[in-house]
Image 1 (cartoon, rainbow, N blue to C red):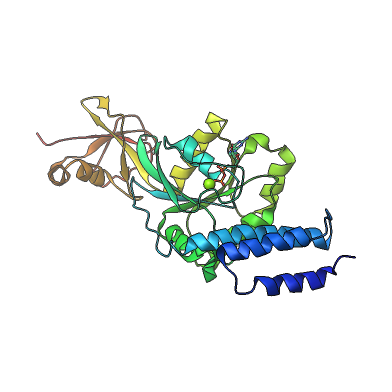
Image 2 (tube, rainbow, N blue to C red):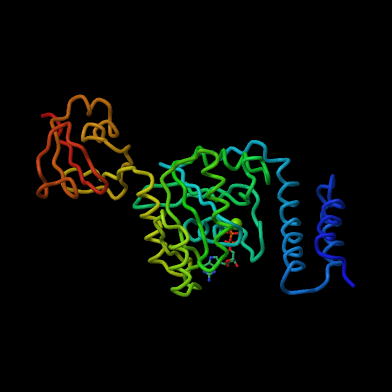
Length: 311
Ligand SMILES: Nc1nc2c(ncn2[C@@H]2O[C@H](COP(=O)(O)OP(=O)(O)O)[C@@H](O)[C@H]2O)c(=O)[nH]1
Ligand SMILES: [Mg+2]
């Protein structure tokens, strides 16, 4: 006759109290071994809870070393990727950059933020994977405070959720970020979308109605390109291509939103900003190609600008 599940839960809590690290994991394993082997119902719930305890204990032990995590900023903007374990964050980071990151089909493969540079329309942008952000992060569970600190300093956040996964996992992550008072431009990447039946994608959209949802798969280059452009749009930055003697430079200049032609000139040379006579402009801001504009003309993402230098 197995112990009633409520009694078992009490015994389990008592046996885990005050234990951390390896000792706690060993105690959890012993408890799991003692559980009756039901697939459903209260004993199955207990097994799930205990299994999660193992992961969370691991995260907590590694958290001792992550009180302050500084991710050195590189590139024109920093975008954090955050979501539950195993949704494909590392894979996405890897597909978008040329770094090698360990991935695995189990929880918490990576425990620290991992930065990587990706090129978006010729501009380098830093992506940072934030692994292991769990419910209770605001109380520093799983070293959550330091992770939230990284999110706070990012320019934008891409939430990652796998269609078909338990929505509560992603909800918990979003709740922690909101609880921390962090508000950034963001969208929801529906990861591993090649594996997702249309109903699962529709359900993800329904579960997170306030968010823009972008399906992405590391196996689909077009989806990766769409991801890059959506991530760029989050930064609010403007890419302007300089044109000199009729030749457009392939690498754009990244400028703050609200920039003008004078800021473009300033990015080339301060002195030029003081003396240039206006510009010709092609692209989204131009009423017609090669339009002549004044020094205060605002620029938009994708504009081509030829500065008119003094004689
Ligand atoms: N089919 C498919 N599998 C993926 C995709 N992205 C990740 N995976 C797999 O999902 C598992 C978890 O990926 P990982 O990047 O480690 O997830 P993370 O824990 O969120 O960093 C690995 O087995 C990956 O190979 C995807 O776009 N399509
Ligand atoms: Mg990972």
